[in-house]
Structure formats: structure tokens, C-alpha cells
Length: 148
Ligand code: ZN
Image (cartoon, rainbow, N blue to C red; front, top):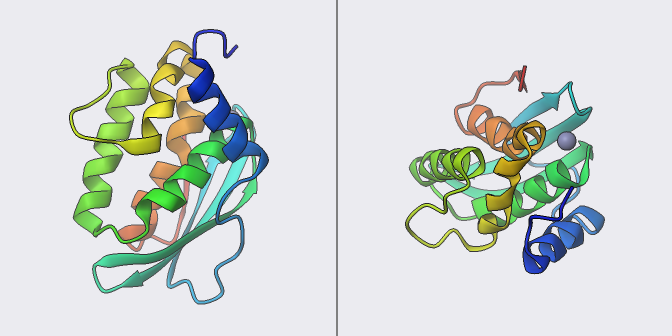
């Protein structure tokens, strides 16, 4: 299924799914949200420590496929230090990228590895799942978000 992804992107995704970064409970988190993708069976909990308007720390726990794990891992790395407004902006860019396959303007860094996901419609939800959870968490909505 990864045939159309470039080797580099595939390597980054495999690396993050095998050795997810920030894969732990965050004891002093002041925000958290759960994301579920019933079609695939992805179930992740995102923990954020907000320092005012800024994300001081982001971690996650849960289980899921390689794409959802890699996306969660890269998301937690990306969110650290971002303001709520920046997270919202990134969410829109990532959503556009994984649904259209077009890389948005600006440097998305590692997030660009998910560009190829748009060719696998069932996987778009896996990639975007942690972003939905992140949006719920920064908005302070203590609820489970689902892709369905
Ligand atoms: Zn999945």
C-alpha cells in the first residue's frame, strides 16, 4: 500500500510508528482528548500541557495502525511551543494536504511525509485523527472525537 510513497517518506513513517516519540502519559497535562477511528481501530489519547496560549508539552498513548501512530508521534513533536492559533493553522494545512495530496505553502517539515496518504482514502482518517484530538484538546473540549 505504500508503493506510491517515496522511500524517504516511507522510512520516516515507519520509524515513527516503530519508535513513536513522546509515547507516554503526561502526568501534569492540563488538557487531553481521545481520538477514535472505528473503521481502522485507531484509538489514541493526546495529552497537552498548556502554558497560557502555548503548548508546553505534548504526548500521546494508545494503539493504532502505522499511519495513526506516526502521525501522532510527529504531531506531538510539532505542537511543542506552538500557540493555539498556530495549531489551528497547521490543522487546516495538514487536512488540506492529506485530502488533496498538495503540499501547502510554507515549510511543514516532517508533516510533509503524509502528502502521499491522499491516495489511500481510508488512511486519510488515520493521519488526521490525532489532529482532531489536538483541536479538541486545545479548545478544552474534554470529549472523544471520532472520525465517523
Ligand atoms: Zn489507522
